[in-house]
Length: 378
Image 1 (cartoon, rainbow, N blue to C red):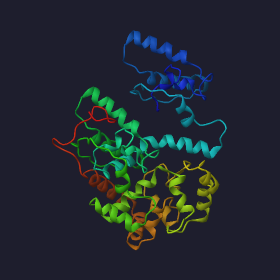
Image 2 (tube, rainbow, N blue to C red; image 1 turned 90 degrees about the horizontal axis):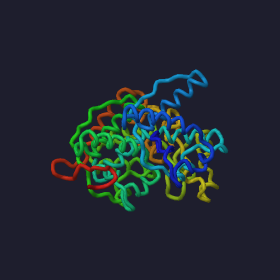
Image 3 (tube, one colour; image 1 turned 45 degrees about the vertical axis):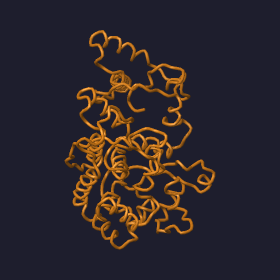
Image 4 (cartoon, one colour; image 1 turned 180 degrees about the horizontal axis):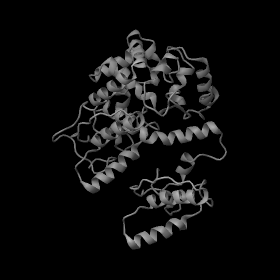
């Protein structure tokens, strides 16, 4: 659930009761003592999450003389679910590859805002409809379910903004600014964001399939998809660079490794193929055990938003069909080669394309609403 002190909450189904934590964690009384003293001196000022962070720092210094600055300002979560400990905490029984993948998933939370923003703007425009909860909402659409990361970043921002300026900043604007901040954090790409968007009231899962570009299609279909949104082929190739960060699951990139009938059989670097097949072996794909196995979209610089993604395509190391296909079409291949050579120009084009995308079918004036909670209409 993030650094929100949810592990401190008591309850029969809380994180404390999760298998990795039950009868294992120690030191709760240290946090309790600090909270009691702080509440006596400054009531409702310092969160349990901040106390936890400072206590961890002090513990590191006490036993290892390791000191680091701690950023304050974290707020406490309200949800604590025992089953999420198994799904999120690294197991003591796994190998190095699984540990790396587990930590990579946590790193993606902040970086996921770019992807959420794209998946929002291409379906019904930039109206934060992707944030709405519901059994048939966009979150439940096949391209989004169990894929998007970073919702908690938007939630935290919304909570703080509602406390300071109720009913003023829309979830759609928060998502746009979060995507910009994510781009700067992982790629030093900064651009101005226009504010004034309002939030939509409709979110339909089936619309994700008809609007979002498929990871299984070729360059021509990708160009057509972006053209329907009023965006150029060059903008499509430029924004594909967002795949310099993030992950994809085995079920999504398996067709790249094991092409079926009528699917593109694109060239792939042999060593990269062997590595990818070790993450997504055919037997685990067949029995369903490994369909959720994650792999980095960019094998070269997976934690940095940069133009090295295009170098991976030139080296036949694109993870998705929709990545490697950019080298199979003469028009897009030329753009890929250009982006490899001129990284600084690509970064400027990326910023411009993000600004353009942020204007798609926005709701302004009296249209839509400003949600109090990004997960639900008012």
